Length: 211
Figure (cartoon, rainbow, N blue to C red):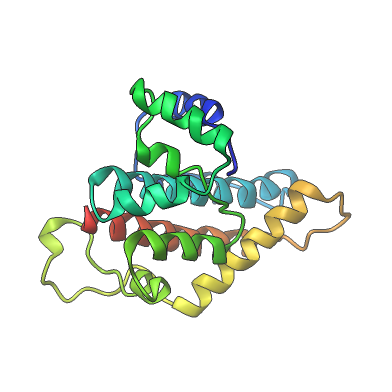
């Protein structure tokens, strides 16, 4: 697991109220649009922030599904069951004291270090055999949208998933390597913002529809 139950409790205490994170992407895009030229230090912040938004979006989706009841709760327990005996004992303590839910525990029990990991856990939790197609075909947003002929949230499936893959790679380089040039330009940053916005929004509405 990525964090101990104690660390999960600390994270959840800091998190505050859950919210739609695709609005965070829009806010970031707003500030980025005000740049008059390539400002490398700020541009390099964008991939880091976007990956953080994706990570929190995925964990929020898992938490919401697992805490909503079956069949998602059982699938969340399957994630927790893979922990070490030490962490299992600690998680029972936090759960029995009502400090953490099964959803909160399972939402931090897996890696979200790349697109493949994200698709694996979302596919497992949702029960979708092809989660990539399910997300790419997501059109429904509000209840009023049901039955309407709407365009998918993810406009270009291949471009979006390819961009998210590249985003994770670049974020790793920026955070963990001291490189002279990252290849990040304002145009690429805008592409990351565009596709991450669609990706996060699709995950959030995909989850909301099932809840």
